[in-house]
Image 1 (cartoon, rainbow, N blue to C red):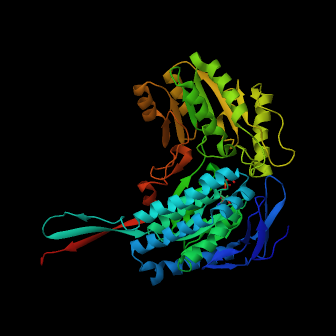
Image 2 (image 1 turned 90 degrees about the horizontal axis):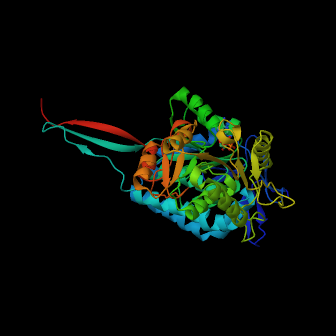
Image 3 (image 1 turned 90 degrees about the vertical axis):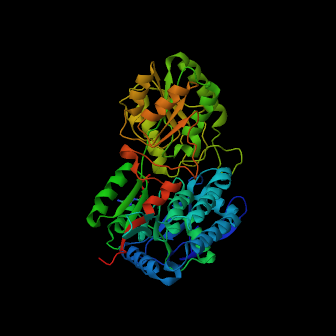
Length: 499
Ligand code: ADP
């Protein structure tokens, strides 16, 4: 299917039809890219083009940044009270809820995740995040500081300014919400660069942003390639802050580029998170969470608990139960089929990357378990996979595979478990399964990670900070902590004496 330049009608397999924007969203208008180039976005299940979208070049990025800069000082945004900013955000959340079916269909077509998940999680989580930060918009203010009777001092929390936000393809709607929520709450303006693999859902949200009544230029949304549009945004001298979610390698590039104008940065990057099962764990519970922790979202989750560390006393029992559970629960197929648990990987390149880790592991002598060799005849599918017998230095054990692929290893003591868990350049998350309270809290303290789950995995909550240490990132999103990257503190000193 080829598309008209700025919008086209699309239809999902569930019968829903909508007008899909394809342009760049700058100053509340959909416009053609000055670059004149288009990019085809592909349905990972059918392997066919869904439609094309406009690709921003450096000139388009410049226009989007200028629009955000103008809006930052425009009274229609700058003079709004926090309460009114919150109302705008709530209105957008209401519109997203009203368009839930359409947005879920777009997300599934473009990303490949099951429709049941897009509808039941991704879309509602977008509005949940916006409402959460809308609530903070009039409750996030400075302090008066007691500096004695002759002086007064107070702090103002002021917007950082124009925020460049760069998001990945695994949760296109939700990664946008995590960034837009706190930025808008604090009165910033935004240029959001979508992932080139999955631009469609947020372009549809752009229509709702205009309908909600956001002033022109407050939120600009562009599609484009990372090395071109992404890098132009990071290098732009008129951008005050970059928030990024993506790979560790790109995060390092962004740090380097942002240094030129000393931009504020927050980074949420890769992970290879351990899930540790002790002999005394509730095994049935550990198996269920271990499955969700690595297999959900096709394994395309930065916090995926992809390394399973199991104590010797229960190793064989756990492995039998885990592989049986994968066999039963990882139903692979058409993402619009309500029984599907696992859809295709997002792109052919991602599928090939996952498969090359699996074949590398097999060649190095690992045992490879797949519940079934039967995958759908089309689509970028990778089989759910459990790898055992790997060296701990092997690429599949150390690297972030970003697919439905768990590695399992055995340990004897708590100190060995901790040493293996922390032997990684990443530090995003970790999970511990034990009935021993003291051990649970010791592990929570000593794991080198931004987040720890006790007797669960990948449990996320809008009210709880999310982020990593080591090469997994800088700064936090979600919760009250998530606001900190989006305001500057200004100190005001007032002399009350006549001296
Ligand atoms: P992945 O490898 O999972 O696609 P990336 O880190 O490459 O992860 O991409 C995440 C986001 O970062 C995407 O929006 C992508 O376009 C963008 N990006 C990639 N490279 C750069 C770069 N050099 N500068 C800025 N943004 C980039």
